[in-house]
Amino acid sequence: MNSSDLAVVILAAGKGTRMKSSLHKVLHPLANRPMLLHLMDRLEALNPVKKIVVVGAGKDQVQATIGDQAEIVVQEPQLGTGHAVQMAREALGDFQGNVLILYGDVPMLTEDTLMAMVTARTRADGKAPAVVVLGFRPQDTKAYGRLVLNESGELEAIIEHKDATTEQRQITLCNSGIMAVDGRMLFDLLEQISNTNASGEYYLTDIVAIARQRGQSCAVVEAPEEEVMGINSRKELAEAEAIFQARMRDHFMAEGVTLLDPATVYFSYDTKIGQDVVIGPNVFFGPGVVVEDNVTIHSFSHLEGAVVREGASVGPFARLRPKADVGRKAKIGNFVEVKKSVIEEGAKVSHLTYIGDAHVGAGANIGAGTITCNYDGFNKFRTEIGKGAFIGSNTSLVAPVVIGEGAIIGAGSVVTRNVSGDALAVTRAEQKELGGWAARFRSKQQKHKK
Image (tube, rainbow, N blue to C red; front, side, top):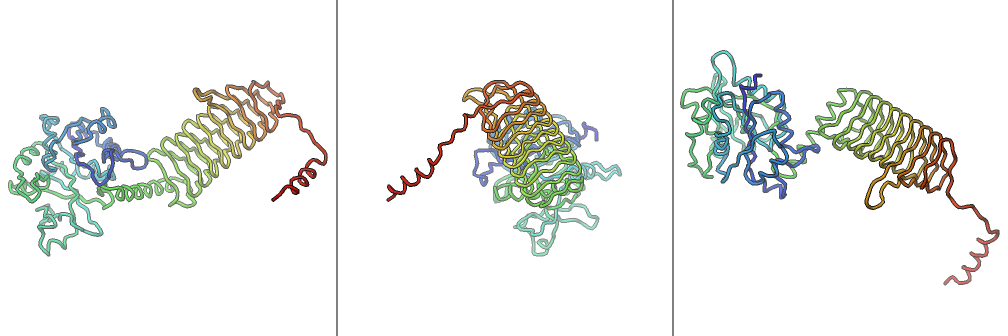
């Protein structure tokens, strides 16, 4: 599509009172990404020449989130959806192409649906409609407006539920409010709408009746109900999250990922996973995770901002924090946390260990209960563990410190100085034994027991 043919206006001026939040409604996250940005992501394939977001309160929040991805205009006061689109008039200038009107709290639309709307608006047979409305057929029509089609299948009218006759309420095709409009007549149509209604607002939907009165045709494109769901409350946000996660699970399984219990695995919007990866139950992916081929992620693991390379194993009950880089065939075991560290190929960090701000060489073995003491209360320091080193259980590596290649650290050590390659370092006190002491102690205590 030629970018000069399309502009997008996103309406986001609603107060979002049902969210009960200081965060703007359209910025609430869906799979760890603000819902408004999900919608804007879908626009990339359409390559619009203009993107305009209409806001009311919370302008600064929206501006900080979208940056220069779109122009922001303000609707104040909020006098309805038709009035909101009118606020974009100056920003659109003399634009004459198609105008796609979307809602910032409807983030589940797909690229295919948006493409279908614009294609329907620009049909090349000389019968291009002035307005294309996105319709859907919900399981429960509730109080949705109905889309009335004529014998030719054109959109004849939008009838609000409260104004519909008993017969019209039997219509299952409902109005989503999303439209594609001929930009040459958009604002002319908007100028004709009235606010003489119970709410005293200017409704965008009224442009359909005005266009029909002028002899212009209008059309409908249909989408699944889940694509057009609006998010106005925490409950609806949770419902949208469930739909998004189901889509992601289906996508990854279709791409060669095994999910042992799909319903319990949660992905981020940007999760990347290779083929022949096995993911156990109750695994959570935060933003910025890349998992290469042939990896196993065991149950109850939490990954965020991490890379897991081919053939590695993680978990169960492991936590990979941002900038964790787990090498090929490396092992991160149960109750292990890794942060801002590189674990080289074949290294093992198997049990009850914290590795932070560190580099662990290839083939190194980190014993249970080991920690890198990387923080002194003010600054972070690095630990370097050489290739093939063996760190005994319950060791504290006080950074900054370097453990040479092939070195062995005795269990229970507190290492504060660098250790040479192939050396043995032990810092625990010498073991002593006092014969019979335990028996004498028990006897003494028993006499004094109350």
